[in-house]
Image 1 (tube, rainbow, N blue to C red):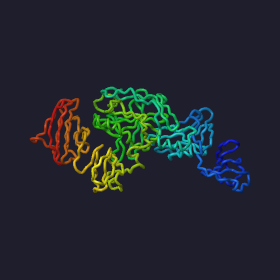
Image 2: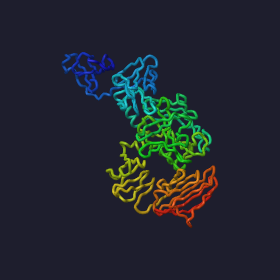
Image 3: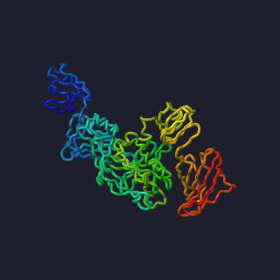
Image 4: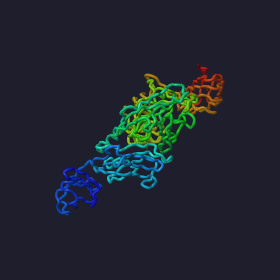
Length: 580
């Protein structure tokens, strides 16, 4: 027999784990000791020192024992390091030794222990890796999420296989005496919590964009709580949080949504090459970097986490906004819909959302400036909100919460009942099914019909759908969509009924797509700020009074407006020029 672990119960009694049938041995432990058969939850109590073949000397206790404790007495006795170059996780005594408890057994470690991911101990691959001590006291690396009742967690990384680096390195040495059921409950229901500090500051919002400081910020020192690890976030230890705060930007790439991180620099945003700011767009079934349109807006979302190198980071925004009103509305909700699958989101807390405007006319390094939100504040403050990315992981996160479909057609073909929810990747939108034609009121959801032959019914925020007339109490409006300037400009009215473009040269305004009978549209045409006198050649669908297209205003920054009525084929246009 081999005893694989012992716990002193006091009064000379032991709780021991054995690697064979405990009912066949009578002399390996004192009377009254608890005996566990290794690898099972079967516990027995020794009653006397009778014959080793007499199974009556054992009585099965039948406990669902807690197998406690699991974890570390402190962080001061041990030092954990991850090394990208050698793909190695090491834990070493800070002085002479450290203790770790697993399933009620204490293991004392007096030398450095490591697991190497070059094939020596494991072969590292893309994604999350969990490092822990198992019930034998061995250091293990795995991509299978640990069972907190069976192991003592040590560390976690998110591995970027393309660039051979860890983009997240998270402390996981949880303290005694928290039992595993409490640990699991806190992890699943609360995640990491905000305690104090982490205030964005030194923000110069709504400035000209001429200086780098118009796009930078600082973060104050603070604390977060990961279950029972109180994690201090302090400037310079090791991340620089004074202005300009050095925050890495995290984003997704490709069809698999693989996570990547840019090396931290003076700005918490990501540029499209050397041009304007980019946002993280999901299009054509894959994630990519998309340059925001000239003068458009994106969001940057700041998070805190128990990362040993960069505890404050930015997650790149996933939407583009054509005007400040839309951006301010988006800043209040975009964070709640972030697609965070593939990252240890239960370990994070949201700090703030910032609005950035990007323009060719801004003279600073990133061609961007920070804008105030709808309350006039420099950022949307999420600290202390209680929001955890672990609870609702955005439209991809509802996996397990609501069904997710790639297209509207697939969603409409699925079996559903009235009021069921689903999410469609194609439109990046939540839907609610309904089969009746009666009017109803709904908030923040679109509607798919289960009983109208597959037609999609669209409903606006706090609006009302009916098969008859629609009346509004308040405003009905559409945000301005910014067209991409080029030799040929082609409006797509599905992007919005009001569209705007800044002309960078003599252009052709091509016939638009998605025209609707009875629709009205507006085109806002702006001369550039440098040259002016740009001209437009109009497509054949545009019809003008007297058959003659107008001459655009010529001054730099001059603005003209074309109002359009559509019969489904032709666009009947009227022109108003030189707004100032």
